[in-house]
Amino acid sequence: MKYFTFLLKSAFDDFSHNKGRTILTSLGILIGVLSVVLVIAFGLGLRKYIENMFESLGANLIIVIPGVKKRF
Image: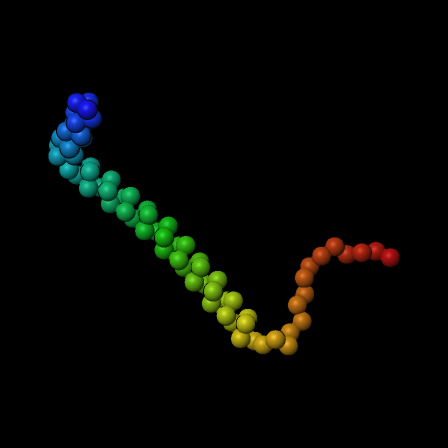
């Protein structure tokens, strides 16, 4: 238990001595996570928008599925 408290105290001491590096590292992590979340949200939203556009065309459509060309 003493070792764990020593680690915590040492970490907080290092944070207080290197405030600039701590802030920049935290900011970098925040921007990275935010950008990943935004890209995923944008992709899912665009996918749903395109699906809704195709669904609004109607049910009287022919669906073409690519496959293997058979030779007779």
